[in-house]
Image 1: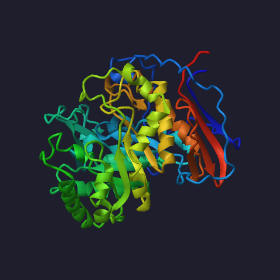
Image 2 (image 1 turned 120 degrees about the horizontal axis):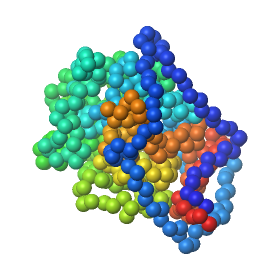
Image 3 (image 1 turned 90 degrees about the horizontal axis):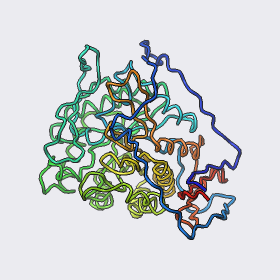
Image 4 (image 1 turned 60 degrees about the horizontal axis):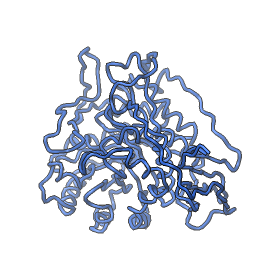
Length: 481
């Protein structure tokens, strides 16, 4: 018995994926450029680590025969309706051009194919967020930036180190308006929906961010889900971006001023903000208890959180991924994720708002080589996504970084190898395909944790229109017997 995930269709339905050829964009005349590619080889970067960890020994009392009984109608306590694009992607702004494409007429066909795989299984496009740490020090420009060959590119980075102690070494970003046209063209091809992050580094000097909000709404239209205002504000003081005494009251003052300026912009949709997007030193419940929804409820479209189960930032010393691998190979990991929000989820539901994990993955600061790119990480992603869906989260997005990142769902080759190397598909990308098939195309899927006896063999049932339609069974144990 080897570690595995089984998706059972109780109605006999299946999904058949096809490869799409992208030749032009609806409404755009310029062709997409493509190139042939050879097999990608390791470059020494974390994204291509060859490290393989040893799976934990099977528990001595493992029960190999697990009885499962499903109720014939939707049980009490089933989740809110879930959509097939529930498990999506979060792209760091600093690498948006590397992932999405060079500009609005030179997009990455491989990325489009990754998105098309989701659409094929769930009937509509994937959900993608563009933002992250780099959004808060970003500025939009009307024109693209010429590269060394004079070709227009949409992302320009400056200051490649962080003198303020941020362990992610986030660069400052200039991005061109063309980024939104790129995103819109992707939506025209594969129906992708978007979150976008607004800069919050200068809340009292935010005219550029106001222009960004307008551009995102005008260009992305119905494909813009929400604008994230501020990324992990609870870390601003620790990273040197605010005074050391900066806390929730100061954050509220800035947030209110920013929204006042945003109101003057006469956006088409006032209720367009996602927040508070805290991760670490404040809890989301603390922010809500301080009056976040009472004070800003007219603007808040969704409540978002950021959460990683571990970190590879060196904050608590060096962590050997082999030492913690077993922590991911149990249903306890998903339950621990869920327990962080047991009191918060009901508060968000009572307010009638979607509850979103805007950014997560196996570990912050790029994940762990050998762990984050393992099949075990894919099982963790599936289990966590289902556990969070069962407790009424409505979206979960897996973060994507650059070449030094181990947890990427997919990674393009390094810039100097783009002509003769292919993209690398990370193990956790397959989690998104499993979830897309499990939730399907109905948009009325309800999830129930079956609470099976063994922590190593969790299971979930999916109900649609009052009937069980699919089940997802996970086995975390590797046992050759």
